[in-house]
Length: 141
Image 1 (cartoon, one colour):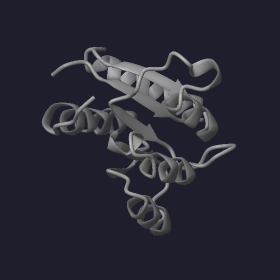
Image 2: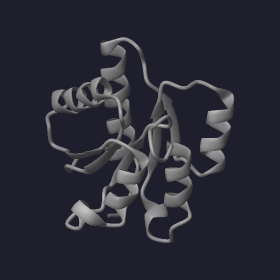
Image 3: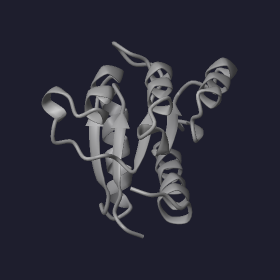
């Protein structure tokens, strides 16, 4: 398995640290870029402002409830762009609201994962995401 570039779109500092820690435990082979709201995510993906040198991610982990621009709006923008729509987007959120799930899949999310509340369960979820999306699934850069 090669190292991948992951864009983590998350506003909760605790969840950011937990996600980074989980990937570090998996060997730290992936580059993880972090943005803290939906607007920053789009700036990163379109290489605007401070993100002019940003590399295209291989995978996006996207929270739903964020300031400035929520995850649903970001997902809609990504999946309506001819180039960006090829990047797998995993909605990783605490929401288990059926409306959020339906809306995410209707906007072409590649997967919807609830954030587990327990640390060990969260690490296991990140491990499974890595195993499927970065090891088993085939993608192009």
